[in-house]
Length: 365
Image 1 (cartoon, rainbow, N blue to C red):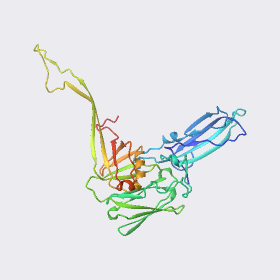
Image 2: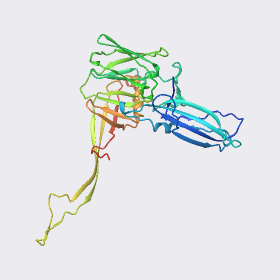
Image 3: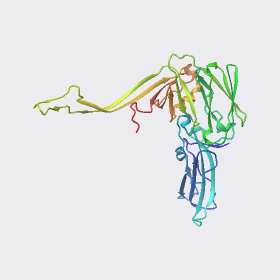
Image 4: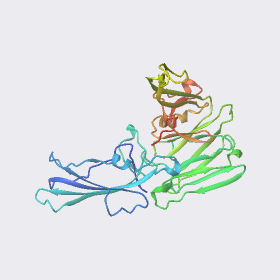
């Protein structure tokens, strides 16, 4: 399985060169590409670093270079994964044209991140028994809320070769995830349809085809639909899209800013030696009007396990709101939120503020 780099966290390289030679400089070739894992002939970047301290250390941080090639857009418009590889040559003062080759490694890069307590990149996708593996289910919550008739999307890591099993209306269904090695399908979104026949407490079973470990998703039905439900879609810490329902009260606001100037509306008539003005013209003229809309959304009562995706939603750089008819890009405006615990609050619900990520007046140039 691939070595994973979550490039919203730093990705450092620093090959061990030993102490036999003192190297004066290092030349790195960095390649970033999509498709299969065979590295391209030409490098994307060629970088040179000099040894100014005499310690044979040439550390290099790659994440910002890689993120230029990841596009966290809405589903089919996105580039969720790319391959990244570095190769390095090192030169001594005595052999300025005869380099020694060290290092060289390939990662599969996602626009995800790790927490401080999880340690440094990369995350090796090799062992589910460790705390650092890339899970088959690319989200942390295994309780998923659904609305009858609305599809359920589940992000899956393709290299797990997972089998997804569920029962709807007494009919069993199975979806088998395959991996053809292409970066554009390393994150796959399983779409569960026919949810009008699902019931509260139904489950979806995900079996890892490599390690045979099993993840069970428990489905919870949202029954009370007095308000218009909104599906909020966001990139989580694994660099995958997931969604949360906000089905309670929503409040929309518009904020308008503008400038004004004093306008001369005097009109002179050449045939009559007098001046006049029209009472229909603006003496105080408004211009540069900018309008921005915001929306406040509230969840229903949820389980404490949704604290983690709520936290990741707050930290997401790419978020959308689906109102059932249209999908709009938004930014999370909530800057601080108390994470609730069932032992303290008994009932857990959250209210978040969002800014629509565009001006209301179409002014795209």
